[in-house]
Image (cartoon, rainbow, N blue to C red; front, side, top):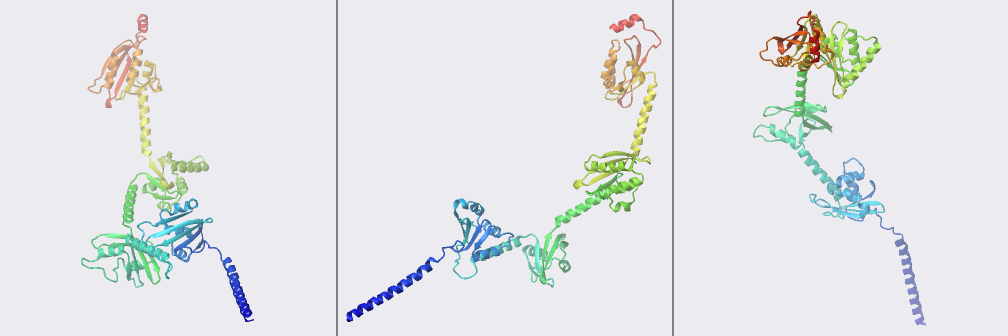
Length: 524
């Protein structure tokens, strides 16, 4: 009976253990089956992890977010990350474009970057996963994120190097105008201005006056007197920072010299324009008067106070019309259209016209285009020139009328052998008028014409030689016989300036030519 109790106790104990084990197994299985699979959003590697869908940031690790937060680049997360990674990994953009084909990549930073960085990229389910690893740091060590800390240190070193190499003067002042910080360019300039043997002390010496640095005007120009003689010019800009100021001084010697040269050039132009006898008016692209000279006042009669108000082109011409200083058209509307046409023609560079004014003056008006759509109008008084031209034409007409009254046929040749003048008697003798352009007006062509109407003679060659020969010329004469039997007296005489006079006159105008001689001459 005792044996049965022991067996029963063992069976019960074994059953209890089996039940407890079953309960434990059943409890563990649901917990294991409910565990979610590994997520691509989790941090599966050391370093900063970024997950992008195109340029949209889906998720990132705390270190990656700290890296992006410390960037001062404007733009989205992909722009900021690319701006930081590209100097370390020049092939980044190309490898990311090929990621859909390659599946993954691993890049090592350039040798000049230290400590080295490793960038791993892979594509999972259409998303791009980038992992940035710093090989010399362990992410398991508590403290600031090494990637973000590294980015901040690199940016700080870059800013220090940039400020040290900047060619402009940068410094900070306290409220009492005491210089508490300056860049290398400021220190170098301040050291040059110190007396020989003296070193920089604290607080730093001032280069510009306190009043200049406290004005706060943006873009003010200040002059610095150099210790070795001469001056240096700077454009100063200041910013208020709490109770102090941050100031920048940009060298502008080239700009000052250019402005001085331009000012001298403008003064030279002004003096030149002031002595010009031609009236000058320059209008800008809006057709407002910008520049004029004193000759314009004399030629147009416009008051200086009116021109100083910078009137428009139409207003200037209206005022000139009121003073009868432009040709009066048939009606006002046509005159207005003429002004518009003048403006358009002047802007294209083709306007030039002669104005005959009611007062008897004659003006030549020329329009010339200028850069940026401006135009320049030039008014020149050519009344004397026109009077001289009219007198010259009148003298020519009078001279022509005088020689037309001479019975002797006259032809005048220039130094080059061109016919410059003939009279009506010449046209009657030789049967043509050179002014009508029937024959080329050279001595050779006219000699050929004369030769064809006369009996054979060697005088024509002598006439050509006499006209073309300018050395020791003396007047001479000869006789030729026309085909109709008339005898002509030919007279050659030199004139002033190398010109030559050829005169022809019938020898015996009343003598009849025998019919037999006339027939022989014609057959010859």
